[in-house]
Length: 118
Length: 106
Image (cartoon, rainbow over the protein chains, first blue to last red):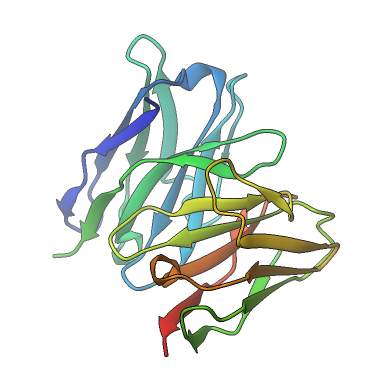
Protein backbone atom coordinates (compact mmCIF):
# COMPACT_ATOMS: atom_id res chain seq x y z
CA UNK A 1 0.00 0.00 0.00
CA UNK A 2 1.24 3.45 -0.91
CA UNK A 3 1.40 5.73 2.12
CA UNK A 4 2.87 9.08 3.14
CA UNK A 5 3.02 9.84 6.88
CA UNK A 6 3.96 13.31 8.09
CA UNK A 7 5.29 14.14 11.54
CA UNK A 8 7.07 16.92 13.37
CA UNK A 9 4.36 19.53 13.64
CA UNK A 10 3.65 21.44 16.82
CA UNK A 11 3.59 24.80 18.54
CA UNK A 12 6.56 27.10 17.94
CA UNK A 13 7.21 30.75 18.76
CA UNK A 14 7.60 33.38 16.03
CA UNK A 15 11.16 33.35 14.75
CA UNK A 16 11.60 29.72 15.73
CA UNK A 17 12.36 26.61 13.70
CA UNK A 18 10.75 23.26 13.06
CA UNK A 19 11.54 20.27 10.87
CA UNK A 20 8.77 18.24 9.31
CA UNK A 21 9.22 14.69 8.10
CA UNK A 22 7.27 12.63 5.57
CA UNK A 23 7.95 8.91 5.66
CA UNK A 24 7.00 7.12 2.46
CA UNK A 25 6.06 3.50 1.89
CA UNK A 26 5.08 1.88 -1.39
CA UNK A 27 6.84 4.59 -3.39
CA UNK A 28 10.48 5.68 -3.62
CA UNK A 29 10.95 9.30 -2.63
CA UNK A 30 14.10 9.72 -4.71
CA UNK A 31 12.37 8.52 -7.88
CA UNK A 32 9.46 10.93 -7.66
CA UNK A 33 8.64 14.63 -7.61
CA UNK A 34 7.86 15.19 -3.92
CA UNK A 35 6.16 18.31 -2.66
CA UNK A 36 4.88 20.13 0.39
CA UNK A 37 1.49 21.83 0.29
CA UNK A 38 -0.01 23.77 3.20
CA UNK A 39 -3.45 24.91 4.27
CA UNK A 40 -4.01 27.65 6.81
CA UNK A 41 -7.01 27.14 9.13
CA UNK A 42 -10.23 27.68 7.19
CA UNK A 43 -8.31 28.64 4.06
CA UNK A 44 -7.36 27.14 0.71
CA UNK A 45 -4.34 25.21 -0.47
CA UNK A 46 -0.91 26.71 -1.08
CA UNK A 47 2.00 24.95 -2.76
CA UNK A 48 5.20 25.32 -0.71
CA UNK A 49 8.07 23.43 -2.30
CA UNK A 50 9.09 20.59 -4.61
CA UNK A 51 12.16 18.38 -4.99
CA UNK A 52 12.52 16.62 -8.32
CA UNK A 53 13.92 13.16 -8.85
CA UNK A 54 17.08 14.75 -10.27
CA UNK A 55 17.48 16.89 -7.15
CA UNK A 56 16.26 20.20 -8.54
CA UNK A 57 14.42 22.21 -5.91
CA UNK A 58 11.87 25.04 -6.08
CA UNK A 59 10.01 27.11 -3.49
CA UNK A 60 6.95 29.29 -3.33
CA UNK A 61 7.67 33.00 -2.92
CA UNK A 62 6.21 33.14 0.60
CA UNK A 63 8.79 30.66 1.99
CA UNK A 64 11.82 31.25 -0.21
CA UNK A 65 14.94 31.81 1.88
CA UNK A 66 13.31 30.47 5.07
CA UNK A 67 12.31 26.89 4.25
CA UNK A 68 14.50 24.07 2.93
CA UNK A 69 13.24 20.86 1.35
CA UNK A 70 15.43 17.75 1.40
CA UNK A 71 15.25 13.98 1.36
CA UNK A 72 17.07 11.02 2.88
CA UNK A 73 17.12 8.25 0.32
CA UNK A 74 18.25 5.63 2.84
CA UNK A 75 15.20 6.37 5.01
CA UNK A 76 12.85 7.02 2.05
CA UNK A 77 11.82 10.20 3.83
CA UNK A 78 11.12 13.78 2.74
CA UNK A 79 11.83 16.75 5.01
CA UNK A 80 10.92 20.40 5.33
CA UNK A 81 13.18 22.53 7.50
CA UNK A 82 11.29 25.69 8.47
CA UNK A 83 13.23 28.63 9.91
CA UNK A 84 12.27 32.18 10.85
CA UNK A 85 8.69 31.08 11.31
CA UNK A 86 5.90 33.64 11.21
CA UNK A 87 2.29 33.60 12.39
CA UNK A 88 1.20 33.33 8.76
CA UNK A 89 3.04 30.01 8.45
CA UNK A 90 0.41 28.47 10.74
CA UNK A 91 -1.16 25.68 8.71
CA UNK A 92 -1.60 21.99 8.15
CA UNK A 93 1.37 20.83 6.09
CA UNK A 94 0.84 17.98 3.66
CA UNK A 95 3.44 16.09 1.72
CA UNK A 96 2.29 14.87 -1.65
CA UNK A 97 3.60 13.20 -4.75
CA UNK A 98 3.48 15.29 -7.89
CA UNK A 99 2.59 12.92 -10.71
CA UNK A 100 4.21 13.47 -14.08
CA UNK A 101 3.50 14.49 -16.76
CA UNK A 102 0.17 15.84 -15.50
CA UNK A 103 1.65 17.76 -12.58
CA UNK A 104 -1.25 16.68 -10.39
CA UNK A 105 -0.83 15.72 -6.74
CA UNK A 106 -2.02 12.13 -6.72
CA UNK A 107 -0.82 10.81 -3.34
CA UNK A 108 -1.19 12.80 -0.12
CA UNK A 109 -0.26 12.31 3.50
CA UNK A 110 -2.67 12.99 6.34
CA UNK A 111 -1.00 16.28 7.23
CA UNK A 112 0.73 17.69 10.29
CA UNK A 113 -0.32 20.90 12.06
CA UNK A 114 2.15 23.72 12.61
CA UNK A 115 1.12 26.57 14.90
CA UNK A 116 3.30 29.67 15.16
CA UNK A 117 2.30 31.68 18.20
CA UNK A 118 3.76 33.27 21.30
CA UNK B 1 2.08 33.51 -10.73
CA UNK B 2 -1.00 32.25 -12.55
CA UNK B 3 -4.18 33.14 -10.64
CA UNK B 4 -6.99 30.60 -10.49
CA UNK B 5 -10.55 31.82 -9.82
CA UNK B 6 -13.35 29.43 -8.99
CA UNK B 7 -17.05 30.13 -9.06
CA UNK B 8 -19.21 29.93 -7.17
CA UNK B 9 -17.46 30.05 -3.79
CA UNK B 10 -20.25 27.94 -2.38
CA UNK B 11 -23.45 26.33 -3.52
CA UNK B 12 -26.33 24.42 -1.99
CA UNK B 13 -27.67 21.41 -3.84
CA UNK B 14 -29.78 18.33 -3.29
CA UNK B 15 -28.95 14.68 -3.75
CA UNK B 16 -29.44 13.82 -7.40
CA UNK B 17 -28.75 17.33 -8.67
CA UNK B 18 -26.33 18.09 -11.48
CA UNK B 19 -23.61 20.38 -10.17
CA UNK B 20 -21.16 22.45 -12.19
CA UNK B 21 -18.15 24.33 -10.82
CA UNK B 22 -16.11 26.71 -12.94
CA UNK B 23 -12.41 27.53 -12.77
CA UNK B 24 -10.77 30.34 -14.73
CA UNK B 25 -7.03 30.87 -15.18
CA UNK B 26 -5.45 34.31 -15.50
CA UNK B 27 -3.64 33.11 -18.62
CA UNK B 28 -3.78 30.12 -20.94
CA UNK B 29 -2.69 26.89 -19.25
CA UNK B 30 -3.48 24.49 -22.10
CA UNK B 31 -5.08 21.51 -20.33
CA UNK B 32 -2.81 21.53 -17.26
CA UNK B 33 -5.74 21.69 -14.87
CA UNK B 34 -6.51 19.31 -12.02
CA UNK B 35 -9.48 18.98 -9.66
CA UNK B 36 -9.51 17.85 -6.02
CA UNK B 37 -12.15 17.03 -3.42
CA UNK B 38 -11.52 17.74 0.24
CA UNK B 39 -13.68 16.74 3.19
CA UNK B 40 -13.27 18.31 6.66
CA UNK B 41 -10.25 16.97 8.51
CA UNK B 42 -8.99 15.04 5.48
CA UNK B 43 -6.32 15.54 2.86
CA UNK B 44 -7.38 16.55 -0.64
CA UNK B 45 -8.15 13.74 -3.08
CA UNK B 46 -7.36 13.94 -6.78
CA UNK B 47 -10.47 13.58 -8.97
CA UNK B 48 -9.53 14.80 -12.44
CA UNK B 49 -6.14 15.47 -14.06
CA UNK B 50 -5.23 17.16 -17.33
CA UNK B 51 -8.66 18.80 -17.39
CA UNK B 52 -10.70 15.73 -18.33
CA UNK B 53 -8.96 12.50 -17.28
CA UNK B 54 -10.65 10.63 -14.45
CA UNK B 55 -8.29 9.48 -11.70
CA UNK B 56 -8.37 5.75 -11.04
CA UNK B 57 -11.07 4.79 -8.55
CA UNK B 58 -13.08 8.01 -8.91
CA UNK B 59 -16.78 7.50 -9.76
CA UNK B 60 -17.80 8.26 -13.33
CA UNK B 61 -20.37 10.84 -12.19
CA UNK B 62 -17.39 13.22 -11.96
CA UNK B 63 -16.21 14.75 -15.21
CA UNK B 64 -14.05 17.65 -16.29
CA UNK B 65 -13.82 19.75 -19.42
CA UNK B 66 -12.19 22.85 -20.80
CA UNK B 67 -8.91 24.13 -22.15
CA UNK B 68 -6.81 27.28 -22.36
CA UNK B 69 -8.32 29.43 -19.62
CA UNK B 70 -11.77 28.10 -18.75
CA UNK B 71 -12.60 24.78 -17.11
CA UNK B 72 -15.53 23.04 -15.49
CA UNK B 73 -16.02 20.21 -13.04
CA UNK B 74 -19.41 18.48 -13.30
CA UNK B 75 -21.02 16.07 -10.91
CA UNK B 76 -23.81 14.45 -12.91
CA UNK B 77 -25.91 13.25 -9.98
CA UNK B 78 -24.84 14.49 -6.55
CA UNK B 79 -24.48 11.80 -3.91
CA UNK B 80 -24.42 12.25 -0.12
CA UNK B 81 -20.67 11.56 0.00
CA UNK B 82 -20.01 14.38 -2.52
CA UNK B 83 -20.72 17.19 -0.08
CA UNK B 84 -17.24 18.64 0.27
CA UNK B 85 -15.00 21.46 -0.92
CA UNK B 86 -13.58 21.29 -4.44
CA UNK B 87 -10.35 22.91 -5.64
CA UNK B 88 -8.87 23.41 -9.06
CA UNK B 89 -5.09 23.56 -9.52
CA UNK B 90 -2.97 24.54 -12.49
CA UNK B 91 0.20 22.59 -13.24
CA UNK B 92 1.28 24.64 -16.26
CA UNK B 93 3.80 26.54 -14.16
CA UNK B 94 4.55 26.92 -10.43
CA UNK B 95 1.42 25.28 -8.98
CA UNK B 96 -1.46 27.43 -7.80
CA UNK B 97 -4.91 26.54 -6.55
CA UNK B 98 -8.33 28.10 -6.81
CA UNK B 99 -9.92 29.39 -3.61
CA UNK B 100 -12.30 26.45 -3.38
CA UNK B 101 -16.01 25.78 -3.87
CA UNK B 102 -17.95 24.41 -0.94
CA UNK B 103 -20.84 22.14 -1.93
CA UNK B 104 -23.44 22.05 0.84
CA UNK B 105 -26.71 20.26 1.39
CA UNK B 106 -29.81 22.18 0.33
